[in-house]
Each structure stands twice: as C-alpha cells, then as structure tokens.
Length: 274
Image (tube, rainbow, N blue to C red; front, side, top):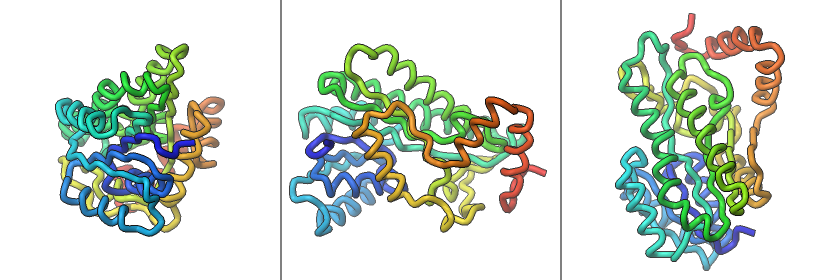
C-alpha cells in the first residue's frame, strides 16, 4: 500500500533509518534521505540504487540536513516538494542519546538532545505537514520506551522522547477529522550505532556500546515492523515484550518499577549508577 509513495526519512545514514530506506527502495518508493553527512548519504544511495533488490521505480533524493537547524528542515522539505511534488510519509527518526547522571551532566548535553530529538521532529513536521494533510498521509515519530518511563542516566533522552510523544499525540488530536495518520513508534533496544554515539557527561561521544548488540532486534526487523505499522495506520507501537511488561509494572506497581529500572540499567558495563 506504500508503493510509489513519497517518504522522508531523517537520520537515514545508519540504523533504523538506513534499514527503512533500503526496505522502501524495494517497494518502488520516492525517497528522501536526510542526514548531516551528504557524502555518506550519496554513497549509500548509490549502493541502494545499484542493488538488484531495489525496484526500478525507486528514486532517491539525498539532502544534507541537521534537524536541529530549522532552516535545514525547511530546505529539506522544499527540495522534496520540488523533486516529487508532495509528501506522503514523514519518518522522524533522527536522534541522539546520552549516558550520564543528571547531577554530573553538562546542561548543554540536554540542550543538544532536545534540539535534535524534539525540535528536529517539530521542525520537520511543521514544514511537511501541509503536503501530508493534502494526501492524508502519515507523520511518524521513532521514540523509545524511554518516552514512556524515565530511564536512569538517560534524563535528557527520556525528557526529549516524552516531549516527542506528547507533541505527536497533540497533532493527532488536532487533525482527528482531517484523515491524518500519526504513529508513535517505540522500538526498544535495537542494534545500531546510537549507543556508540551516545553523549557522556561532558558531551563527548561514548565511543562503544555497553550492551551486547548481537542480542538486540536488528534494524532490518524494526524497519519491517515500522512499514507494517504505517500501512495499518497504527496509532502506537511498542515492539518489545519487556517494554510492555515495564509499562504494566509502572502502571500498577510504580515503586517496584523505579527500583527495577535502576537495577536493570546499573548492570550495564561502566554504568554511572552504583
């Protein structure tokens, strides 16, 4: 049902974003790949278009976009409209994480997370929304279970994902009679470079994942579930069983949930939690 649709993917150079682009390319979509490194985007796009699995009808536009910059988001949407004439789906996937106790963290780290995770979603949605409304399309926010329950040592990340969820739920209600589809998509831990690039207390990248990535859901599997949720026009998707259990415990046994979350995150190698 998405074949031939115009789809924007932010954070398209790695992880869930790149896996989604590859999947949609096999469907014959018109794709806009948005990320900060244009050289990498162009290389990836060339490889995707050369892949025998990619549909001959697929077209890809690469746009250098820092989603924390409003002008970049506006320009990216304008280029998408100029190239393809409209937008059917916006996948707000670009995001960064952190790993530090709030009492230790430089506040600029939290500002960076809000700028990318929250304001990036706001900017892209604001400029893409008129065309999406015309086509009764979809606005998607890729958040996290951290957008439902606070995670220790992830204060800025949780705050930004809570904010994205609240923003998108409000947009859905405002357009409940307009045919707009809004999806809040929470994958849980996914094998990607998000933990490698995660910011530490002083804002420097963590540089290595504290978790066994091989035991996590692959970005490709997440992309397939994301596509299915868009096709079915789901309102909300929480992928992992443990996340659903977490929400149940939070609702009915909140004090136990606090202790469980602390102890669970404290098991990470090098955790700032004691």
